[in-house]
Image 1: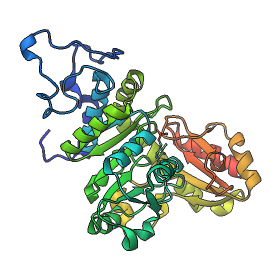
Image 2: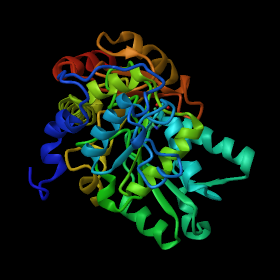
Image 3: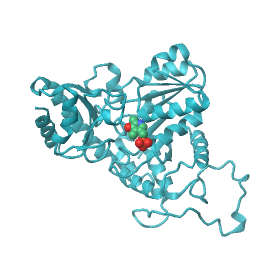
Image 4: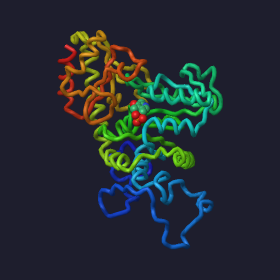
Length: 379
Ligand SMILES: *Cc1c(COP(=O)(O)O)cnc(C)c1O
């Protein structure tokens, strides 16, 4: 692969081979290790003090698993390679977000109406340290050097996109950092770094994990020295994931490209059908998704179309309560990003949400089957 080739073009290959160079045993699938502690070098001449190791990468050499361990490193290597950055893995999306806040240490955070848990973290920072939180509309007026602009896009639960370029220009003009929660549009759908974003986070629980069976989060930076600092912080917060999660995650990353492409293509087709046939579906009031947005920036940010999550508004609260139970292929549960399709009456888990809104996460089942299931329930 030549260095000029785009990551997108080779995503499928990188996801399989990104960590080849870290292989420790000849097994094609690297083993899951559960050890918390690792032998120091047997040759006394190779032993270095902590001071002597100060300029080496934070995860170089492994001696204690709160700091670094091989299964986590493999997942970080693959995620870094498929995103064109340097990845640090955490034990949940929210601990990744908290780590970004600890690293940036802002006085003010400007965020859109993002995932309620990220707002929960901001509330803790406000309670303990007086960190102020504002909407993105206040950047021009109030942002100062060292503040953070946090843009979740596409946003939870609607799947609607926000303009990265606009917030990067505005944020940087104030000396603020700009970070993006790209959970709803993982590779190959979206690359926030192309727009000059400083830091990207994902809840790896969702598409990176992809099978609703692991909790993890990731921060990605273009700057290796930032990775080193964040790794060092993680050594003290103890937010490294366990071996099982990291091993499952590495396994899941192998199929990220095909899963996400299939899920997104199905979601885009289903959204198109529902929005074009809204007058034939008596229970359906509105469809939300980035593929329905007409602004110029949306196609630039999401060249393959919108992500696999969209939302629908139904005619009344009672319909919203009943509809999930009328579906055969959609499980009524929170979360998203797994191979199985999910639907959620969102007001159950997010108190800010409209009581007629249902969030839909499209899985890898047959697209036509999924559409038929939704159509019968909305008829
Ligand atoms: C789920 C989610 C999170 C939180 O991730 P966890 O892994 O559940 O901690 C953050 N942002 C978005 C957009 C999410 O969907």
